[in-house]
Length: 208
Image 1 (tube, rainbow, N blue to C red):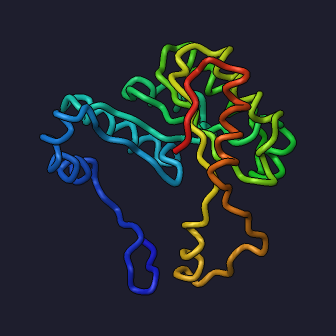
Image 2 (cartoon, rainbow, N blue to C red):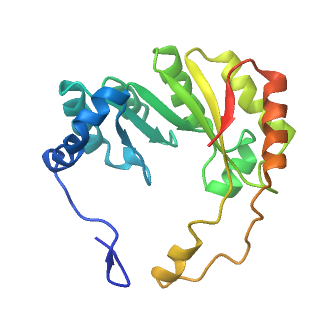
């Protein structure tokens, strides 16, 4: 558990406690077609808990979804796929060297796990954060499109334009904000990104 100026940021729970909270809105889920989505951080850092929670949710008839960066043991990816109806799968950078420079790891394992899921029949939405001056390039947009073209079961491409909503958390945690900040893109710039992606693929592409 971590505190931010007296605000609780997280606490330990059991699978049963999470499901009890989720099931308070079960009537809504039944009518809307919604369900449970595990997001993060990275849910697969707690793969055993994530599996147990999603497995129980499916037993209760709920739609299950997980958002992941894909940087996990392939065995964990295979196992979680058994109880997951939809993957929101991050694809941050197509260029391996740039991926390493900005994230501290290359994207080989991430790509391998993505292929594993796609060929196994998992339903996937590619979720692509786009940061001006970092990955808003035609090379990357074409790479996103080619992924969608060459893998089965890619349902859609969702780009997530950079925003600064998390900056306030630095102060709450008593940490210094990053020295470099990025400009939030204008709506017309986001439309241009989507046009480039759509030029190379027929897969549905939209922004969050």
